[in-house]
Amino acid sequence: MNDINLATCWSGLGRARGADRARLLGGDGERLWGLRGQTVQRLPTFSSVQGLANIAHAVGKLRPSGSAWVIMWNELERAALQRAMEFKPQELTNILWAFATAAVPAPQLFDAFAALAAEGASTFNAQDLANAAWSFATAGVEAPRLFDSICAEAAPRLSEFTAQNLANTAWAFATAGHAASTLFHAISAEVIPRLNEFNTQEIANLAWAYAEIGFAAPMLFHALAARAAAVLRHFSEQGLANTLWAFATAGVAAPQLFDMLAAEATARLSEFSSQKSEFTSQKSEFPGDGRSPRAPSFSHARRGGGATAARVQCTGDRKHCMGFCDCSSPGAPAV
Image 1 (cartoon, rainbow, N blue to C red):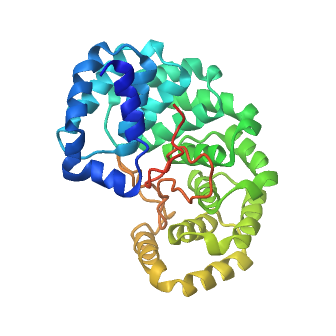
Image 2 (cartoon, rainbow, N blue to C red; image 1 turned 30 degrees about the horizontal axis):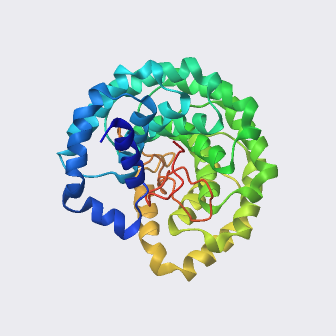
């Protein structure tokens, strides 16, 4: 196969779902070993940077396990570093997304791409900005200059952001511990009149982000309380726990929502018990301000005493999931 065929093949495989995906990944992905071998050989001289980004993106979606795949990721990193100046914003952020999603440490790649993204942030669209922030936060790589650049670009352009872009950006800044008051104020103002666009995962992540970063936004929390109450039965157990923790941590009085949360949790007690136990045990471990230490790099555990902000999960009702989920939904970042 030539380079175009290889990239196209990987892109198709990256769309595998359910039983098809499980079959591909069985036995450390042995069904893909031949293709992996061909790809590793071609990557040093791969002709297309878009194809290179597509391959990384597809492998990131598949997330094959096993030590044999380390070689593939190493070659992808090496090839991406060699061609770094050639990537368009979407290609650059798709590669970052792939490494972050697969939890593959690539400090040199992230450092190089952080500098490029910070310099070129003005050319990024809304999804590129959200993807870049999400990738660095998920990878646990500190990039203050990049986050400052994203803040400067995103704050005046938030009307271009989807609900998921907004929630993911707030989540990323909070997870990275990057307190950008201008951005958080602007997101709050943008979100309030658009809350009907937000699904339960996005509501929970927004509430968690503002509580975690410690940004006072009472009007946003009251609006979130009203929206959460209207769609409470659609929340996951983790979402209920995160929302409860966020309102308690932010010190926002929402008695009606708390009563409804309690009733919903009671109705789903068997499902909720594991999250409730986690909430109780972690709160007791961190009696001060209720916050646990920052999660280590490339750990998907998130900060925050009590409820842990899970990786963004697909709820099945978002047209463009962007792949920020553990279910490998079809809407990963476009390539």
